[in-house]
Image 1 (cartoon, helix red, strand yellow):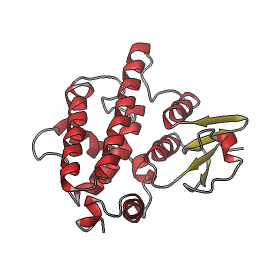
Image 2 (cartoon, one colour):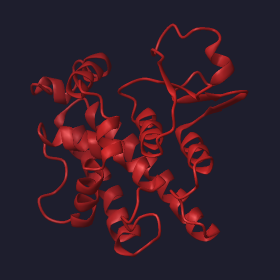
Image 3 (cartoon, helix red, strand yellow):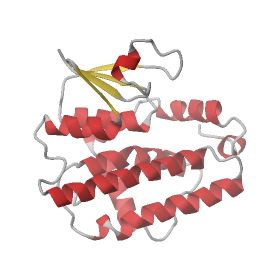
Amino acid sequence: MHPELFLQDFCPYCQRVRIVLLHKNIPHQAIQIGPSNRPPWFAEVSPSGTVPALRDGALRIFDSSVITEYLNDISGGDMLPADPGQRAMCRSWINHSGNCQGLFSRLVLAADETEFSAVRVQLIDSLEKMEQGPLSREIPGLAGERLSLVDVAMAPLFTRLAHLETLQAVLPNMGLERVKGWSTRLLNDPAVLASIPENFPELFQRFLTAKAPRGFLLNRGGPD
């Protein structure tokens, strides 16, 4: 029986798992779980009630970082470096990518332009840490020779930044060249492309309407 992935289409953490499944060509069944009225049995798969969650036979796993590393381990393990120190370094940047994703969520839900601009500065600062940190050195798992779990962790953010950039400039016109090159590489990766729902702009619009109906982005027109 194939692993079952419980997900929501717009969730960035679910997109991480889908990228690994697609990149590794792992047969699986994707099951949509809505944000409300989740069935009682789902607590057996994800005690926190969150997605993504994976059921693989008797195994139940939740949290995207844990799931993606498990999928990598059972399919060759080549998405993280073999050296323990380098693996730990990559895990640190995976954690940092979660902080970046959290800032992006705050950005798009900002109530007004002042809040939007303040969070934008924080997001750029977080990306600058990657520009001057791992992207400035040839670190295995970030050198671009193959898709890594650090790439997987950042791809959903780059997906959303690329869409937002058509609405409101986020990244500065100058600087962050390594981050921009990284984004371009990932957004052209076949597994990343296949992980993005065709109706992504519509899903983005629904998210804003549900979470920030009076927020800055919707007040200035919102996504098409």
